[in-house]
Length: 290
Image 1 (cartoon, helix red, strand yellow):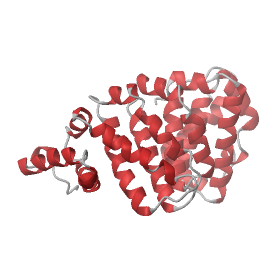
Image 2 (cartoon, helix red, strand yellow; image 1 turned 180 degrees about the vertical axis):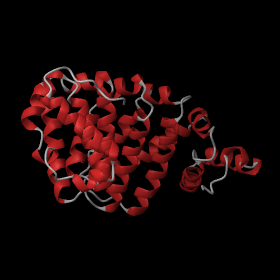
Image 3 (cartoon, helix red, strand yellow; image 1 turned 90 degrees about the vertical axis):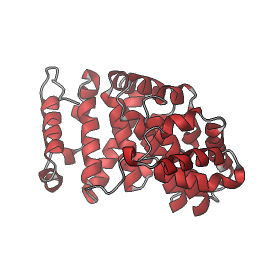
Image 4 (tube, one colour; image 1 turned 90 degrees about the horizontal axis):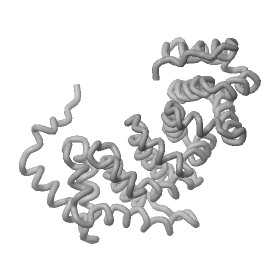
């Protein structure tokens, strides 16, 4: 059972502190502590996102934290302290991205674009990895909502190639989140249509998914496999992609390579069986419930 306090039980003193910390975000000398304290409270103060978004200067202060460390990225000199501080700012932006009352304005202001330089980094040091993972968390919070506005926005940006790069070269956790984001984009009809619109887009996605399958055959991860299989299954809903997958689906998904993983995960096993059935059946497949 969770020991986190109910939002309804947050004391008036805590709420006073919330308002104080939000005000302190605009003061450079008090910002770091305010970021730390507010990031800890974001799960228990349901109105935190609107307070952050509508408070004068707050979003500008958060964006300043983000842009201020761009200079530490090339050459890669980011320290753990810098990374922790900006990740606290990103956690507050994730709070805003998750809230139904602020999400649309968050997108209209194109705030996610400020995170893309972090997703574009390749350094494997812990400060950079933490930064990438937290940035992915903001995008992941957006796509969890299943809102058309989110997918429409993301398709106008470079999020797909950024996720594909992380899926190929990132840590296990970053790969998992990046694949989840791709999966959510594919589950939207406009996302599936976009990726299957040209051979280059489809082949890039298929190539990276294939590389992930080969890597998972050597070092299995049930969470990654779940998202990879779901991406393949959704691609098989597109007639042209389905024809291509008949030729390029990795053998490891057709044989017993992942039997042990699948015994522990019935949903992934079902999706893989449905995928194989779709590729064997020349008729239009019936997509399982998302």
